[in-house]
Picture 1 (cartoon, rainbow, N blue to C red):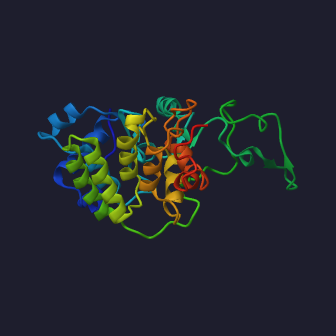
Picture 2 (picture 1 turned 60 degrees about the horizontal axis):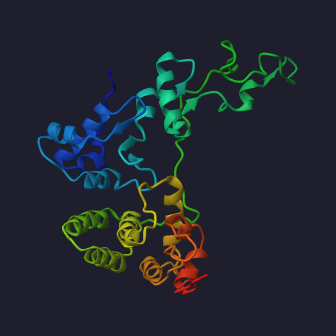
Picture 3 (picture 1 turned 90 degrees about the vertical axis):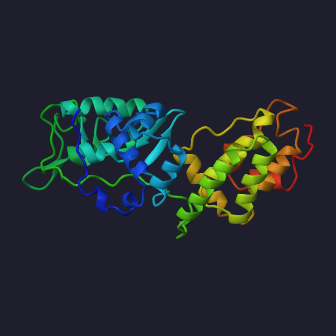
Length: 309
């Protein structure tokens, strides 16, 4: 399938900063993804194309380093990567009336990502498009105007549609975001992950990641997810397998609260049979901790320590 190429990509600072293998990886993903910008991870094929193996997680960090709130690449499920701006770049605004767009819309609906791209589809057209005025300036609606977009082949707004795509939704925390460039710290964490992966004992892995968090107080979510997964695995508590928009938003709110101490929270979970699900079957999970500023404070204050009921 033919696709557009960004001839000005080499002028983008983020792309120029990538090492050669990462530039080739970006190009490979843009070529191999489906029409909706979704790539089913096949690292063997990627490494064959590159002629070498790379740290794919480090690649994701590098590509998204300057856009933590609106990443270029997002993990989707366990084995897919979504190029968030692919559809908009290739197609502009999607429309159900455009036959080539129908397959793309179908894929985005399947992935539940249709609201993340500019698109004119049934149920998403503002009612103002169906409102017309008579010669005296009085609003009126006829039978055709009362139909929703997609029900009538001839239903079009009187004014020509704008060619400017609507703004893409951005993840915004409840609090004003801080101006803090953590790209260097993210690179440092990638090096830490490499070291941690070589450790055989879980306790050594926990100590290394805990030290990174305590020393640097990172504002990005990956170290906290990694520490959570390696810490709660022994209790049978559910691990974090994907980072959704909702999880990222709540994380950014909690991490900026002075009382939030993630290392302390995990330490208290270790001392609580109740939170580990050994008393009544209920177990603590990531989302419950980040849901509000009450749940984690109860943990930190020792409310659940050795609790049996």
